[in-house]
Image (cartoon, rainbow, N blue to C red; front, side, top):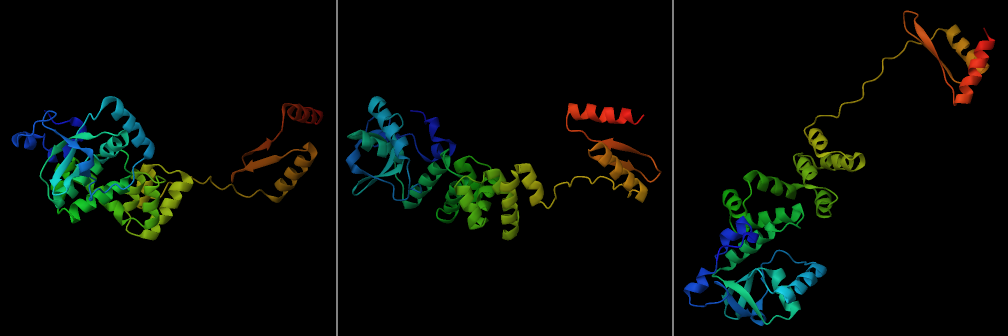
Length: 290
């Protein structure tokens, strides 16, 4: 049986296709074995502790109707079997009341168990960036994987892995925002490039307040200030008699009047009006002055 593409590149490379069981003479569902659900216990190294109850119920209903489409993977222990991957399917199968579960049985020590569970966890699409980063960190420190090996395991570029690991250096408040999805990966990656925690928090505040894009955040993180609006050239002050005449004209017309004059004596008079009716009122006043 070919490897199920749904497993993902990294996990598929770690899980065999069931040939271990076939070589041992246990014929089952195309290289799998039917194992009593009651003999399986959850993976003690499972990094994911919470599962959406509604999603589990939906999967359970699907299993009742269609059965298990993708077998779980287990290892043999003295007490029965221990789950390596497929905990959602295992829990949903329990909810559906299944007595037996199709499973690949493979040999794995505790380190391999942890590695497989972490790699499977990274392949999930509903993780927030911080959960992915913690999984990468555990693969390095607890499983002893190098960046190159880990890149091959999960099918990600080294630079991608490095960007995730840098998130773990962010202040706690920013990590919480990332966990709660108030901060996305692009903005967090830009903030992680700043060495000063206080400046990270200040820029985070600006991101929220001004709704900065990722590109704008990256520019600020590199120390490139946002371009300030160009100030209009300052007009020279009006001579005293001009100011007096402006005030007189404003009172006479009962509206705001502006007088603009440059240093060479050229300028213009701007008369404001509030409505079409006000415009015609001003016209009549001006015509009467003619």
